[in-house]
Length: 104
Image (cartoon, rainbow, N blue to C red):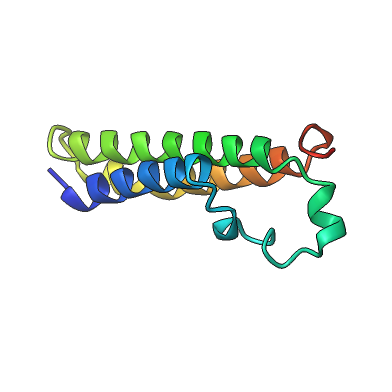
């Protein structure tokens, strides 16, 4: 079992929960550098929910990769899946969070 995948997955899930429920919005890239007028245009609650969901999704997939790493015949497959999962999720997060649904 590849424990680093599992630790990263747990960390990402906890980070998503912390951002959403403890209102750690300063961890959202770009939000803390916005001016007050720009911040008022963003529905930060919806963005935080989206970020929590994406981080939880990546976290669960990392945990699953960690468990499957020891059960599959060629464990390198888990390593090859890591990057597409992260890049695909980040692209989804960027596109979705910049849509009009997250503006006031």
